[in-house]
Image (cartoon, rainbow, N blue to C red; front, side, top):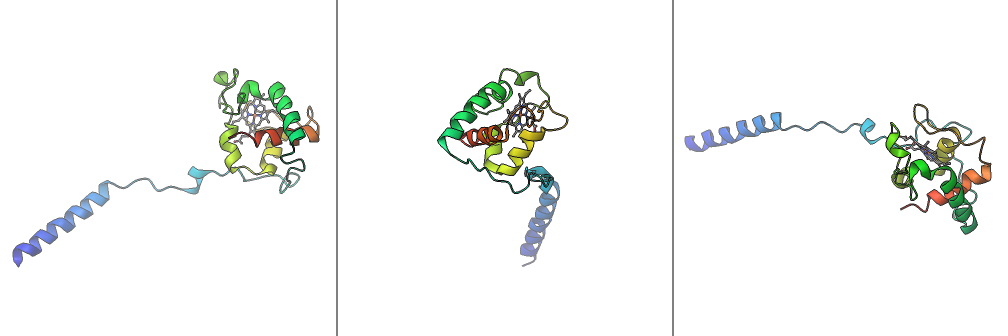
Length: 141
Ligand code: HEC
């Protein structure tokens, strides 16, 4: 009987010891930054009026190829010819596509992203072209 108790005590001590040194860092919300924060009111909740129209996708493809693919790559992987020299590197639009809503994309493409090579395009592209390029980005898988 005594022997058994000693054995249980040793196992219990080992468990405490192991859990104390094997702990992993807790995951915080900052680690899984969802690209939805801080969308300015003028963009918030907007949705693409052209959505997946095939004309919009075709127009968007030509805008993308002339304006965006040098950095973001032909199929949006963030690996265009200019990408290697940029810090931070261009975002993968394939990844962004999975999480970002239309309003976030419209905001970023219109206004750019401070501290990166991403400039705003709202003065050089029309509103239609901005939505067309979003229609095209939505085809990236
Ligand atoms: C000069 C290179 C360059 C060009 C041209 C460019 N981008 Fe970017 N883009 C970047 C970089 C760098 C970032 C910032 C990456 C990051 O957020 O870490 C970025 C960010 C973005 C984001 C936001 C990504 C995020 O996670 O927040 C979107 C959307 C985007 N670009 C779309 C476009 C579209 C559409 C065009 C064409 C109209 C374009 N970009 C043209 C370099 C470029």
